[in-house]
Length: 178
Image 1 (spheres, one colour):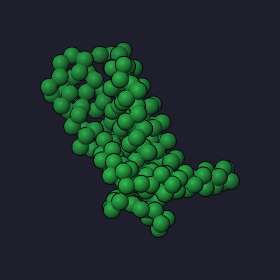
Image 2: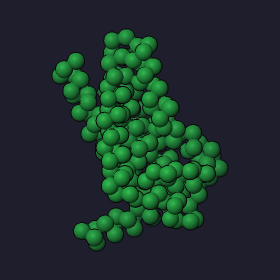
Image 3: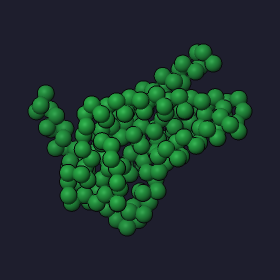
């Protein structure tokens, strides 16, 4: 098991360098810090609250699903972060640019990625014609987290997985009971 984890960690670092150095350019240096905020608390909490407050019927139901998926998935994210206590890449890899991030919690899994996918998966279920756009934006949030040196690729992958599980479970429960 330790050998498998070493292989994963070594590939994680290679992918991290690929995103944070090989693809590094002035345009992405400006775009990625903005994109990452689409997985932050201001956007991911205010959007569903606005949908619940000002929406009707399906819009309100969608907002309730988003806030439910978001809050329940983040309980697990917080729990996992404290169990694994994985240091953020920029804490231990000195040549990774961190774009002046000052994050105090742990890296694994990515909360921004979990939040973005929780929001955009539910939106995709309500507006399947926009699913490609929504899921692309969520994926960009995950990529931005690696680009910014805040997370390893596996942090992002697990955040996506958690969001998929909680979003589809929430949607299923809402469709059965509400």
